[in-house]
Structure formats: structure tokens, C-alpha cells
Amino acid sequence: MAGTTLIRNADWIVAYNPDRDGHVYMRHADVAFTNDTIVHVGKDYGGEAEHVIDGKDVMVLPGTLDLHLHGYMEMHGKGFFEDLATKHMWMTQLLEYTWILQDDRESSFAATQASACDLLKSGCTTMAELYCSGLPFDGWVDMLAGTGIRTYACPMVQSAHWYTSNGKDHLYEWYEEKGFENLERSLEIIDDAIAHPSGRLHGMVGPAQADTCTEEMFRRCKEAADSRGILLQTHAAQSVMEHREMVRRHGKTPIEWLDDIGVLGPNTLLGHAIDIDQHPWVNHHEHKDLERLARSGTTVVHCPRAFAQWGDMMRSLGGYRAAGINMALGTDCYPHDLVEEMRIAGLMSKVASGHVDLLPTEAVFEIATLGAARALGRDDLGRLATGAKADIAVVDLRHSSMRPVRDPLKCLIYSGTAAAVRDVFVNGEQVVKDRTVLTIDQDNALDRLQEGQERALARIPELDWAKRSADEMSPFCLPSHLQNS
Ligand SMILES: [Zn+2]
Image (cartoon, rainbow, N blue to C red; front, side, top):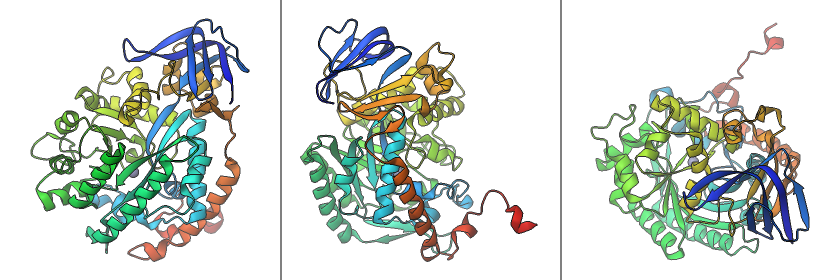
């Protein structure tokens, strides 16, 4: 919004305090922003304001950041993927099922828009969208800009993809030269995003997975990222199968190999890093991956829900953090709800560590805000502070999921729902008002995605090794009464 917006006398503000490089509660104070920048957080804003929001019964939060999702594709699997995994491959879904759902341009864009709506409505103001089904469709960058959410566009590239020919073998089809060609094109897309007039788009170089890119591909990606001063994101340690393959190829864990070839570092984000050497399913002979990640300054983007669906979990988020690793959060598959992802991250860390002190509520919120901003090298995101970007969520403390309100951040993360998020601003623009997304017609996006899902499910027999139909592969969770009577 042009001019200055003032949230006046908010009951609660989660404000940034530079002395502790963390958040603090502020009571009965003001937040003001002019155009895209916060100009005041504290008592008694004395300036003019064109727009005034009453702060009674609200908590004002910095927008959270989702640094790992595949909004374009995974939503096609809603109602299909939930109970699917290859059991004799340590429950992973990746080998047998990941590539059987293929998007088309219409459904890819609809799914991305629907994902962005869900994120915005959960108070998330930045996403890293990772496209890893070949190159994105024409118009991708403009479509991302139109969602209204701050976006790191990451068109991922590969030298190979994995597949299985019989549900048991673990094979790779290699096409290194084609991968290099795609890298060149992906860099043009990234440069377009960075130059986009919205000012809300950024780029990330994306060698897709540790096991699908050659050393030369990683080297070229790292050079391209470093020469542009931008980040690199890849997937690593996301299945036991990947670990075994990397040990077979190199005698090293995926993290160890990436470290040895110079990929790890403060400008690198690793999606997942769950099945590392110390994980009991992996049962490696030595436990050094955590130290490698911490020493190198690599950020791990944790997506707990996606892995919980396969029965796998990080052991543990609090433990990684205590080892000195910078952590961020992602929603990866669906739902794209950062409130829920924070809750799952917090609960599963407690379960995995068997301890309540290792990851207190403040740490969960810190990971979703300041940890992510640190990963991006941005001291103007993930915080409410003068000079920071006006990426702000307003939470309704009268919402039933927030009441009774004692400690509102604990209420939001451990009891609240995204429905308690009332208004959201990105770069000073209001993108959610009274729980309605203003930038996208959410119903229309979901209608288009519904049709796109039907097309994607119909294509499954062509892509599955056993030519199974969607219903054979993933039966409905209840028998049909009419069919059986
Ligand atoms: Zn991913």
C-alpha cells in the first residue's frame, strides 16, 4: 500500500531485539510501515499514517519463510500419496512414486498459485519454489510474481533421474550434456526472476539431488551461484536408498561427498539431510555428518511432515541446532501451512530427542523466521524491526484456536491454526485481508488444479513400471458401500 500503514496499539507484537539477535514480546505498542519498509516498532508512533489498523485483540508477527516446496507438483498427489511408500526400500516414496505424477502447464500454474494461497493464509511471506520436473513452463516467473508472495525461484537441474524397472532395482538414467544445457536455460530464468520489476523475486541455483548430479554439474552450479552472489539449494540424505547408492559410488555418505567436492558452505541450503550417518535406519560406521554441516555453515531446510508420512523423522531438529547447524523450515509437499509445519517440527523434535528442553517454542519460531533469513543472507526478513521489509502477519487472538490466550506464540504454534491469521502484508502490500487472499482467486486456482489432478492421475499407467492405474496403486481409504451392497 502506498503511504504509511499503522497497526496501532497492538495487544502483542513479536519484535526483533538486536541485543539478543532474537525476538521479544512487546505489549500495547505500534508497528508502522511506509511503502515496503518498516519504519517503527514500539510505543507511540508519532508520524502520519494513511491506513490505520486497530491492534486490539491481535498479535503482530514477522511473516515466516518456507525455504523448500514444490508447489507446482506435489499438490497433485493430495488424496493419493498419503499411504504410499515402497516398504522394502526403507519406506521411501521417492523411487517408485515421485515421477509418476506429471504436471502440465495449466495444472502446474494452478498448483503453484493454490500453494501460495495456503502459505500466505498461514502467515508465510517468503517461499523458495523448487521446480524439478525439467524446466518450468513459459511464463513461470511472471506467474510467481503474480502470487504476491516473496519468492526465491529455483528451477532445478539434473544429470540423471532415478527410476525402478520392477519395484526392486534402483536405477539411474544419465544425460549429463542435456543437464548442462538445462542449467544454462535455468540460469536465464533465474536472471529474469532477479531482474523482475516486482522487486519480490529472487533466484537460487538448484542442482536437484546429491545422487542425480555429477561432480561437474555441482561445480558449474556452484560457480554460477557464486558469480551471481546467490544461493544454491539441493536435496541430500533424503532416503536410505540414496545413502546406499552414494556409498556404492564413492564410499561416502551424501553429506560427506558434497563436503569433499566443495558444495557445502554458508551459501548452500540442503533440503532434508534426515537420513544422515547417525540415523538408525542408515546405521553408518561413523557419525560425522552433523559436524560437517555445522563446520561448513550449511543451512539444512527441514520439512518434517513430508517425511513423517513415510514413517521417517529427523533425529532431531533440536539436536541438529544444538550441534551448531543453521536450520530453516519448508513444507515440501502439502499442505503448505507454516503454522502446522512449525507444530509438527516442534512435536517431532520432542519425540525424537525424548526431551522438552532441546527445542523450546522460541527456537521453533526462530527457525521459521530468523534462521531462514540467515540462510538467505537477509537481515531485512523474518523480523519486525525498523528498516526491515514490511512482511507482516496479523493474528486474531479472538479466534477460537488461540483462546484462552496466555502466551500467544505458544498458542499459535501448539494449538492455533492458519485460520487465526487474519491479515498478511508482503513488501508492504496487503495480500490477505480477513482471511481472503487478494492476489489470487483461490477457488479458481483450486478448480483448475482439480482438473489438472484428474489429468495427472489418468497419465499414471504410462509412467508406472507395472502400468498400474491410480486406483490400483492407491485405493480409496474406505470401501465403497454402494459397490459392496
Ligand atoms: Zn524437495
